[in-house]
Image 1 (cartoon, rainbow, N blue to C red):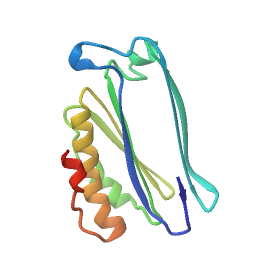
Image 2: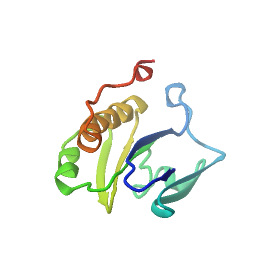
Image 3: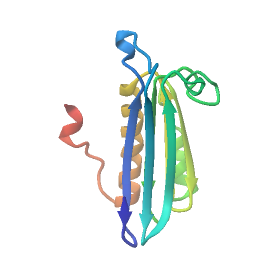
Image 4: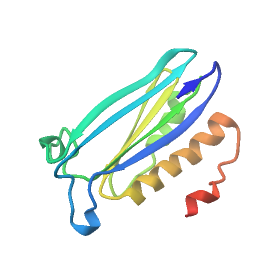
Length: 147
């Protein structure tokens, strides 16, 4: 994602490792992840990772702790502040775990749990807080989110 000076961005991704409703886990294969957000050619956020099916990372407490769903929401905007982050941290992604971090001009929220629906609800509630604060626009969910 390339942003011009002063541009703002909110986006998220949710990753489901295996079809848990069918009792399947991510036991083989590999997943490569890469996210880059730049402003005026300068990286604001760069993340790379790899997940191997069946690896210890999936069960480790320092990794996925046996949870099949993870997600990341990123908001990039000049002037993000600690008060907004504090409000975001009050949201509960239950079931699952959430966290929110603030870097210069970047807010990063994470979800880890057993439900892609819970991840989506958590990120949508964060979006509902962030959209008016960053864009000055009412947080009206797009119709596509209902499908």
